Image (cartoon, rainbow, N blue to C red; front, side, top):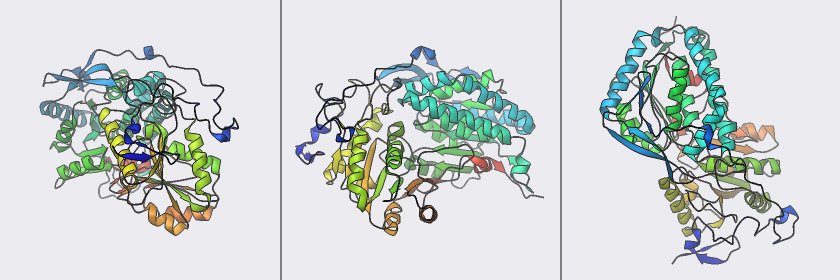
Length: 523
């Protein structure tokens, strides 16, 4: 049996990597010295459970497809089950679409585009988007609980980030719907037609908003395919569309496995394809639409560098690093999974970071005190475990805080690796989990060389008190988004997207509108 080094340098079997600790190991058995409790003392208090009520969401036993403004049964006659990742219990049966369903949805969307939505005045389109935004806000608690139930993310993140940002995107693009000629002066902005949109499982409602809001504002109709492991947010959004009296066929939602998404983007009557997800699937979609005149936006994987200089505000940087990698269990394309710390502060910074990790609460996503929820699906958990094993095998030192994980569900402890080689798999491959690799640098030039040494180019972070250094680093980092003295901050007015294997095109801001418009020859 292989052996590994733990955080104290001792050797123990690799089977100790098992996700669940023995019952006698829990939070408080290894108190951090920085809490001034004395080495080894028990933490004298703990948060009491504060669960959000599941009764906020009323789930049906079965959900069909949303085509032409109504729920329809799949022509395949097949269904699949979506589960709660924190308990592995079934939530509902979901329609498994067929190629015939895809064709019907695209046909209905084309009809709605030609007969009504594509020629509707921008001020009228805006009214519908405003209604959707308002309804999302009115039903925010319901959607927050649903996101956590189906996705596994902590309720405080769904409540405070996902749902408010989703509503904000509809508010923002509603404001642009009747101002396209001012957004793109001296041009003739026209909608593209039918947009095929495929979204991932890590931010089901927010990614839906990122794509549907600008598409509708620009005058396009939509056929959206959510991830098969998180379809409920999109299906509940279908009810929002009905509640807002959106004309039938303007938004259509089909559910099913990955091949249904591929059939959608290949459909000959689709004008625009937008995809957020893994780089491998993005490449497959790119090959599928190559040689056609379809517009394409790809927002793919990432391996973001978070760079901390010796003059950085340390406490603020610690919180930024934790937010950068452990937000949404690290299941974020722009997660700061590579931490570069200047050598002069590396040892003390890592020790303080370990102390902070020991305070993270892992558990029930619906508990308002939970910091790290459940991994979305069993396949993703297996990938995280495989890459962590690879990091250990390649000689990196692993630290995991002592915490007792739930007996059921797909959970993984927050994990930190030190002594990581630049060529290591955990420093090069997207893990998409709560795993942080720590590397060091001496000079800004070395930090840039290491940070840019990746196939990805989605995001990065810089921590320093020198404004000139921030500007210099930002101009040289090959990343679509660079945060300074913060991380994972989003706004509907700001474009988001990457370089290299992180995709191309931008979502958010005016750039997000541009992706759904034909500007014509101009005046």
